[in-house]
Length: 255
Image (tube, rainbow, N blue to C red; front, side, top):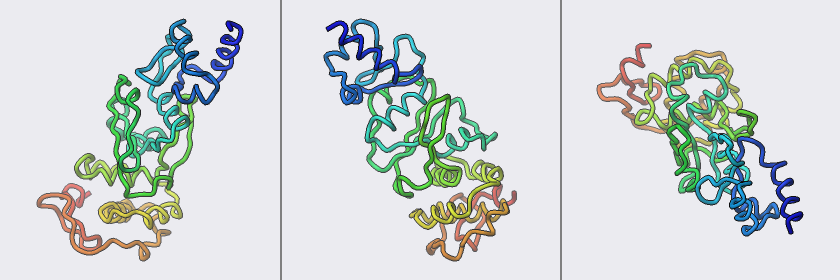
């Protein structure tokens, strides 16, 4: 029995790399039943992260390893988005929250595991649930600290920032982010704007894209992007932008 347990343990540590997390359910599917998991835990070969997840004993696990476990070992749809996605891809030197918070996005009614929510990751986890974009559009896989994560492309990430504005993100800050987006892919931007169901997001994107005047803007098929009717006020005593039917802060309009 001891040999059997040790064989499974060696097999486990081949996949449980430093910095990574495994869930109870994944270990079961891997061939390690719960009674054996409890034995490893009691023997000090595994260390619990809250309930239903483990790490190597004494290992300093960061949010990247935990999020990878959620993305790869569960059916929960969640990705790094918005400001966090831009920062991870080195796009935003303007990122004010890099060491303070993490923006995650999911479809509506998505719940993150309790072990992840309750653990102290040393930063503020902001979990935004929305349906303004399709869940799989504009998502890519990238390596962060030698761990693979699903992250919004820059094209999707800026739309997510605009989705949070003006209540949870400042519109002027969003425009400063836009100024750094010199290499967006027009084809992907067109695809995302055409499936986006938020009129506010589409109006803001087109307004800021035209204002930033990057080369890729001229390749957008703006005549095919519906922006609805009726003015949308995004700031009190704001400046009305007739072309895009929005009222924005004076500070933004004058940039």
